[in-house]
Length: 143
Image 1 (cartoon, rainbow, N blue to C red):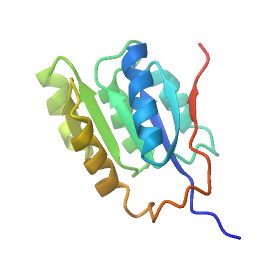
Image 2 (cartoon, rainbow, N blue to C red):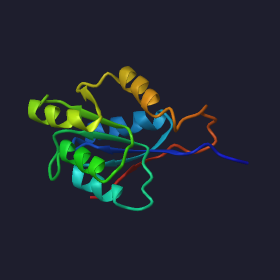
Image 3 (tube, rainbow, N blue to C red):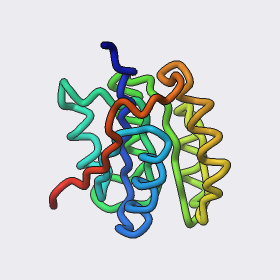
């Protein structure tokens, strides 16, 4: 019996309540989701050989490593996965920098219907009809 490929998403968001909501919603879209609180933690996970993420959602304004630096580093390392950036402040400098990294930007408060549609669109090579044959989990990295 074959199982559909498990889709894995990484959410980097420093606001815990926003991170939890994003993780829960993205898990409802068929992803196993890992949530972390900053870009440095996200990059550390990307550097693990078995990470296998199919989607990255990153807040632009985070401590230790902002989302823009995270996205640029992920691209520099050769990862060509779909990336969604989110921001609540619209920092134009970060928006301008990230625009060169092939990402979609969503402003907070996030339109979750539009987010869902976009995730379906950008991850379609990984998706097929959902059979419910695999678990959809949400994990939060320990501090």
